[in-house]
Structures are given as C-alpha cells and as structure tokens.
Length: 69
Image (cartoon, rainbow, N blue to C red; front, side):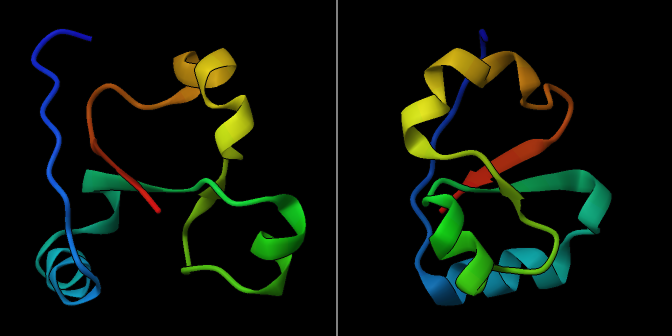
C-alpha cells in the first residue's frame, strides 16, 4: 500500500467529488454496522464494518480512490 494518501472531506466536498468523478473511479465504503447500512446508505456504497476492516483490507480496490464513511 505504498503511495497511500488520505484526505478528509466534509459532506459538501464529498458531493462535489462524486459529481466530478465517474463511479468507476472510486469506491464508497460504509464502515457502519449492518443494521445502520440497511436503514440507509449512499447509493453504490459497499458495507465493510469498521471492526472487520483490518481483516478485509485485501478486498479494497487498489486502482481507484477509496472513500470511507
């Protein structure tokens, strides 16, 4: 995972990012619990609860931006 860069975005910045990029350029990752995800999530987001993240890092795309929320 060399060349890893992190940027914090607020809600407006995320909306702008999503508006200015195609969906195949990034992956949204919802780190909440299953019941929270089921109650509502951003379209296209993938559920990966925070407690499982370290064990499932290999599932993250390496050729796209990954946005966690």
